[in-house]
Image (tube, rainbow, N blue to C red):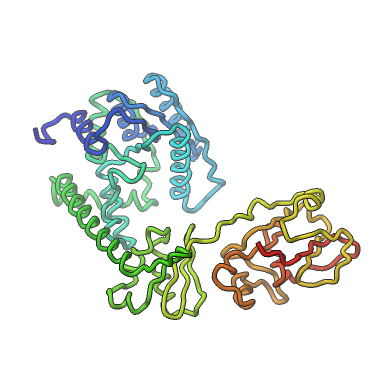
Length: 439
């Protein structure tokens, strides 16, 4: 039987079986109250899956937001499901509201998924959403992964309605007399996605009434092309990224990269598994020929320029981030190894001591590794800690593992190297003294 000859429920069941052959499955389900998520909740429930619905309350639309939550709660109660409502604080955000809301939403979904031990997070994205995303990505500049739109399955995320159009989903909801809420903001043309949805897509769909089938074929071809690209990149990584067996660092030689035809796009793709964004990939290209020691950071890795190569290595773990001092007693009893307290400030001033100013307890004294973007006060302003360490001759692991002291979140002391220009000894005031401890 052809898919178009099947009923909507049969198509849903068949599509989900393609994505997840084993049944039943455990899902966290994002439920906004809109027609897509309400249909998804109903279909997953009637197919016997284990469900933990979650609704994120942003309070952006006043009474309408409360009515959304109430409806979702009523439907979940009818289905015998426990609804989790997450209160999201957008902090009076005026710009990038949709992006911030999405970040909060998915953080809440993921937290609940881990709490419940669920394998999957299900959302109500459909074929129209995928088409909108393709055009949005294309307008910003994208590669094959962006042209895929919204994948049906991506890590723990799954979109069981990706086979259906928005029109088909609403038609099914009306046939089954399902309740849902309309979000008025979905019609506001100040949002780019709504412009694509209400202005561009109707024109494109009018050019080909069979667009869902054509688009599905295109997505399948893009998926195949992307898999070929992934295999090619895997081979290039094996050829170009030489790993040091002792340190685990990777070295990419400029001459080998040139011979393999690596350009800024290829370099960006090579670095993607290590947490570097596409924009950072373009910046990585600028490291070729840059001054040795210049670096680019991802959450877990750093890329460092050398004279003839790029070095990729894991970032130093912030093992010292738990050292926080909120009282004089803390300083007396819990200093890091290699430091002592001179209660009377009797030591001769030097780069190995730092005066604790009156009232320091109210500003939060911290000890930990320096971080990208850290600055320290100097006579004529503020200077990057990275530059201070470079001038001190620190490179590689020594530089990465350099500890600093912060007061009120600002770096005030790099032990043995530099103190903040704001540091002023106080007669009889306590001083931290650095003994030159080497871990």
